[in-house]
Image (cartoon, one colour):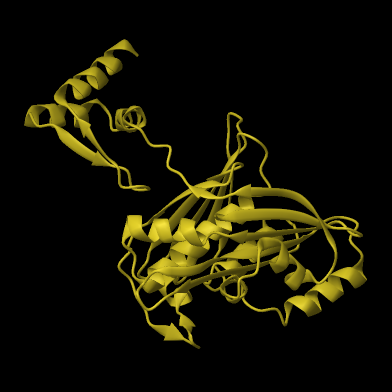
Length: 290
């Protein structure tokens, strides 16, 4: 079972979140049929979105979008406060080989932007964008948090893809300094983090989310929250038809003229929905009623 755990240092306001999402990322790999480098990139974005979701309140959602000029082009992950996540990768069949013994995610992503969209359940959404620094996702996410949200943060993300292309370990952790944290405590954590194992290595070694936190910061913590993580897509035929309304009258009329039913697939989960001529007629009548 995949788990996200949220904790606070006992003596200082430092938030620490750890995540194991191996099963979730493996499900995403199967849905999108990704090759190893694309799998690692997709998994890191999924993990990053889930770590950001730890800052949400009930009924809020967050979207993490990576857009670069590398061969992968674009990755999107959406997560909510219940740690349900779904994701999409534009070009899943990318494998770039290794760099320094690791899958070369940075080259697969390239230069571009990291966009974060927070849906707080209000009329408008909060959106912020910063340039990608490395394309390795973890460094980029920490940069975003430091620059855009002005929260000093350290982020580690890791995905281990086995020789059979399956995901054997995926997860990460995030450390955030909150107002009032002592400088000496932050200096201690920084020294600890400089020598800590990668997130995927700790998961492969069998560490639990709490043990990952203890290994990362080396200080006692109080657990605030612990929940299961799942890959979940909220798509439905009603949502598909609602999205088709945005195509406009002219395009719907063109579809009707062809006289053929349509098959529309969800890019997040691959579910296929049949859109009949009758469905198109209902959409068309909707334009007349508005």
